[in-house]
Image (tube, rainbow, N blue to C red):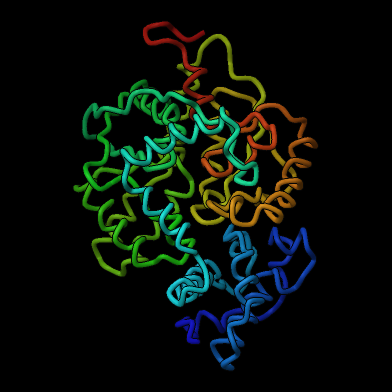
Length: 389
């Protein structure tokens, strides 16, 4: 089986092992095969030596969280995320991974009305105790706030699929913060309901490409595109590589994590905060914000305007959410999460800020009080027209 990997990319790994401490699956298992170095060795065996794609090979690939924590640690610049995505595409294309039920579930994500209805039914099913615990879902709200309405055209505010279905209050918080800064926003037009990040992770590259084209068409022009979900922002910043067109590259350059956009104006947020600051908040970095977008410091700048920021001591190690990973690999995801929970305890516990829905839900399912950073910031702002202390 040909994995269709770029041989130059595959050859960049020198097997130095500096990635090992940053790989969550290696940390919890100690198995070389479940490390970036081990997985690349398996890819080479198939690509270069014609080795058979065995069930063990498939397991090695499927157990990768795709956190990409190995990339910043790699002195050779191995594009591990790209290698993993391409390998999964080859496996999915051959029917070796991503079963039909998973593909059907992902097909719902861009159908926004169906997704919203399904989410409401899922919340009802939770109340009836019909949702398996292995899915790792926290308690979903039966009702959601009204959908955002455009206020102008200074920026685009990407609303997405899961974020709008399960964390719409964060969109409301983002809109409130932008309004306090005098920034108007537009919302995506038809077709902009799903960025395709989960499809890419699952090896469904053709579907992800179609969704990327629809998202691009839904937000024309040259205004900045703000994203408050770390996974979505990372995926959209890589549309240039996914589609390989000048238009996609230009679109990706417009994409900003919302904290990245707000950080230069943190002083204005501090001046607008209420007499009751947010207090102490522990920051958990979503992998795709820290390792892929590399803008995690912006979260601290924005949160620091209204709260006391506390750090974890685990150097940004993955929490185990990984998009759909916690549902597909619950045992490993749980073991990885236990390390994150221990780090949160060492940091003193309390409210945890996480800028990605998958991370937030995975940690909340373990009993952690998790909030999006912008929910905290918006709540800490003084009411409109009330002078700050």
